[in-house]
Length: 414
Image (tube, rainbow, N blue to C red):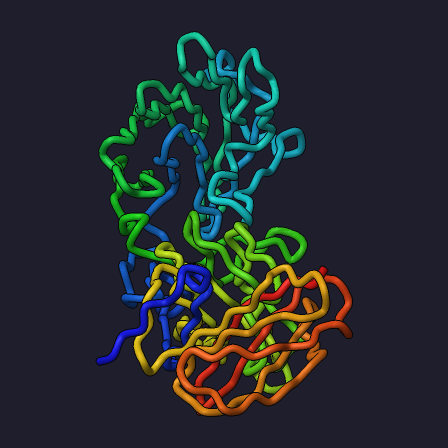
């Protein structure tokens, strides 16, 4: 196959249109399973949702601790300090604070509640305080956890995080069945979290390596606006996403907005329950773009949800930009604009497409088409001039359609 080496000023701007594929990821009836998914390779792992109770963040100097509220656990920050452990024997929810995992960041677990990382004398991570001299996070709070049966209480304290080892203690509220436990970061190298089960009093290694997945399909606590268990899609650490609304999915562009690091860009609100139809429907004219762990950009359109009956989440995915590639095959295309930013109303377009003619569409950041122009006489690497003097200063997305292929780039007008 003929290969085209891109000029240096085109490298990194190349976008390719891939085939649109329909995918169904099943979280099982009752959303009983969590599925980790790679946009490039498919399912990367699956595990039972209810098998864990606590999750400890593993990467770097992180110290977030999640509680499995989607399983039905409720966690309270009590008024007791570590020294009051033995005295805490009865529930007092009226004076305790109900806390939640945040659905925007993996590093904002329930036990990070009340953190203050601005104090240079000792960083408060929520469940404890980091000592600048000893490099130990010492716990200073006692938590109470109401289990999913609605009657059984546990009390929990995180004793320390030292040398990559979480040490913690939990027991029944009356002090019986006391367990001293540890989770060692080194045992979960390359994973986001190490997990703990109250049922087995042991760790769980349940998720794939961080580099092996982009999205997880799961049940979690969302805020709609009050905390509520939902089923949806969350992004991996380092995976960013963009939601485009109000634009036909065929016209939506990944260059039309800023990708977000929040893990719930897709979330759960792409669907809603229609009581008249007695089924879930998906939001019309909503498109997601996801930049995966490798830097490729994918276009996702959700088209169905089977509800708790089967937990099936159905979507189409399409590779729209291979960001790591500086070479393209002859059946792919390239579009670049220069100078960029455009200072004087004229911009040179550089086409490298396997077609003799096509149509250029120009969209503003709201997704509205502000210009359209046909180009012909294209043959391999071809230059054309585009008059942008009528455009207001700002950022624009350029989309060129030719012979069933689509290539995109971004233009800044000064």
